[in-house]
Image (cartoon, rainbow, N blue to C red; front, top):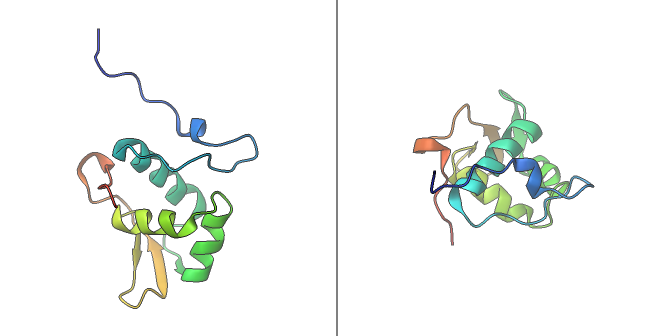
Length: 103
């Protein structure tokens, strides 16, 4: 018998209307969500302005600045030093895809 429950699907984090119910606190669960958002909201190889990133994230949750920050800190999105342009990273740089906890 395993001491760890089987992972729940990311779809469990969304309401029927497609909006995110809450941003998970557990790093592994949040990392799974961030990977899903990066894959579904942002095309690989495309450069996005900050306003475009905000608009995309606003479609799923009101706290789009937190989601944007988690995506960058977690390595799912990269941004230029001036914060004006973003692009999707191919893979998250953290082992197992776990994003660090951000206060």
